[in-house]
Image 1 (cartoon, rainbow, N blue to C red):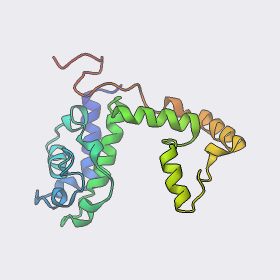
Image 2: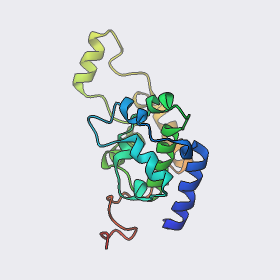
Image 3: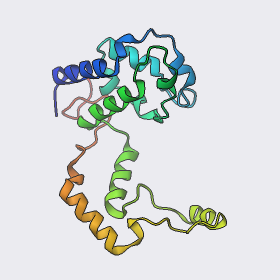
Image 4: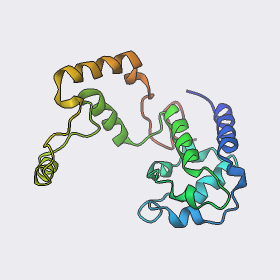
Length: 179
């Protein structure tokens, strides 16, 4: 794990690479964000936190995971701030610290096991059949030889070790609470 000094330096790099300093807090990013209504994500608040060097945007807030990466915020920003890219880099910093949503763990495990993020259930397969699509899409999960090659690739890349063990938001790097 890396400390807050390292995180501060990394957030500074994100600020520079995405031109976050140019943000004028007009709110167009949040107004156009499809995740702003159903979820707590407020792109403008995330940008402001990065501008202010507020590291809690990575360490204590799960809202960065609600971004759909649709780039709507970025396309409408009058100052050209690379908001979506900033959020993606903030997510990478969170993962580096073991901070990511629990469903991501299940998705990673399923990719490692079957080659798919989430296996198709009978209901989805039935819909595919009604649409005249193959019940199972052509991928490595349905070809034993290809799946074996995929598993070899994962081993070579060290896929199982890419993300540190998950820990809940709001805990310190030792796994305890904020004290």
